[in-house]
Image (cartoon, rainbow, N blue to C red; front, side, top):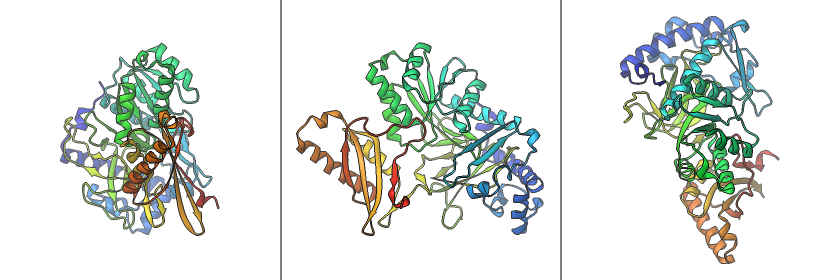
Length: 432
């Protein structure tokens, strides 16, 4: 059993003492080994000795994705190349990827965190787990793989790309757990339903991440596959999957605070928000050697709670993500998040969580069309049934987002399925 009870159930005072010692060490490391950080600290009038504990965290400058791009590829590395044993990178919309490097110790910490997360989800060394995240430069595949291996489970490195083969192996190998994106797991469920073979699988657990998903989607996955689904969180800049995970009570994702120091700030003022209030998640890595990051702005919007969980863990918990500050759409002056649409659709009967939002600008006015997959039976009904459902969906979505939209109902499986992160928005305003 990989459950670091000494770390996950320590008192807040004990944890703060550990975090402070590790923060001081990290600040000293980046100051003396990363010229970019040294200059930023000097510009702020800071020296390493000015940071004596986590109470001084707000003195330190923020780090953003642009900082990684500006120092591409290795400018923020704090370890020499001879100590870097693996490199990952995420694709960048500006043409430059964000590159991260890991020392041997970093990989050991990473695999332990993922193993702890899988343990939280109920996976043991007796399980067979299919890893259906992408392998390669993306951190999902190898991150989940190493964590499951650390746990002692049997790993099937399936990756993505051939769902029929995946379902065949799932049945033949008797897989009891799977790690993949939630949208891909819904697609797997559809394939199993087509095959009429859901009752043939032995799946018990799913560890899903890499994209925002709602509580209703989790319930839908659990009902379709008769399993327990858990939310794992991470990002390549901080480590990869395994930064946080939810437990059996699903009341927030436990952050591994012995390695990652979380803050929640107002994305506009950059000031801390109160416990329980929504803001932007910020992380400082306090054990990483390869590329330690100070106050990294994730753009993910969430809230944080520090009270003890029913599971016994005292680790801080972040709520399910509302979205990302850079994914927020501003349509006719209204802030809209795709997750709001998904949540609204999953509250209704007859719809699926598969949808596409198409934003355009006509005669200087923003327009929004939402294509929604509905059950096959509606296309065999009279036309008035479709019209009634269209009006109902339009009303529910307008209530959810505060904005009217053109609703277009489409047949099941007509929208493209993703094996990685799901794409739910086409913003044609950006294509002009």
